[in-house]
Amino acid sequence: MKKNVILFKFYNYSNIDNKKKIVTELFTNEHIEEIRQRCFQTFFIILLFILISFSEIKSIVNLLEKPVETVHFFQTSPGEYFLSTLKISLYTGLLCSIRVFLSQSIFFLLPGLRNKEKKLIIGLVLGSVSLFLFGLIFSYFILIPAAVKFFISYSSDVIEPLWSFDQYFNFMLVLFLSTGIIFQIPIVQIILSFSKILSGVKMLNLWKYMLLLSTILGAILTPSADPFTQLLLSGAVFFLYLIGSFLVIFLTKTI
Image 1 (cartoon, rainbow, N blue to C red):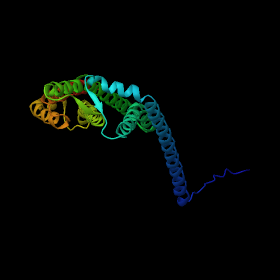
Image 2 (cartoon, helix red, strand yellow):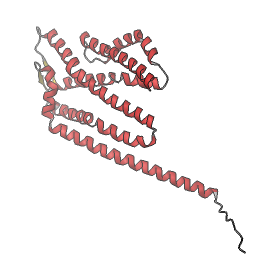
Image 3 (tube, rainbow, N blue to C red):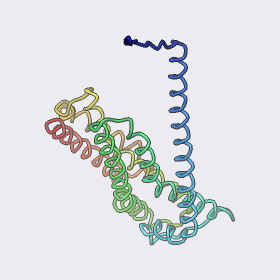
């Protein structure tokens, strides 16, 4: 009569640790390879957008000159305009490829996140990009024409408006970046709320301090010295702060 024999298999703890180490190294190598591939893809797409922007540089320059059609531009050195077009192509290519960079980053991070975290991060990223674009539109159609109109009307009876194109582009670049960053205020408020640092009600109660801070930010971030542009930028900061506060209160109640 055969007896039932129970076989036990004993594992060496060192072997188990080695297996875990090997698996960890495999996962790490896979992540590094994925990061490398996504970085290369993003780099080539950015380079492609820069080349496309440089090939269409005349159309872009005409678009940048539209808010100041009454002003004549000049270059102080033979290569000034060429260097300016290179900078314009670079910044335009980076701006057009923001969506590609963010999508690659999101696709890399999403597998390791929970569903609630995925929705929050995707919403914050999409909201941030949309607000940044709204900031560029606000700067192009409102701030820049207002500043240009003020400077031209102030000196129209004394001197003829002749501006350096490179300095004008630097002026636009600073104004674009400052308004794009300022329009991120609601995103910062949402992050502070979900981090339990400040609530929406507390943000509303601090509106007096924010009114003073918005005036200071408008004076600092405005590249021109005219009070009208500073007032517009300060008003935009305070208005965005109020919108962000109400949005935080709404999200707190719904989520």
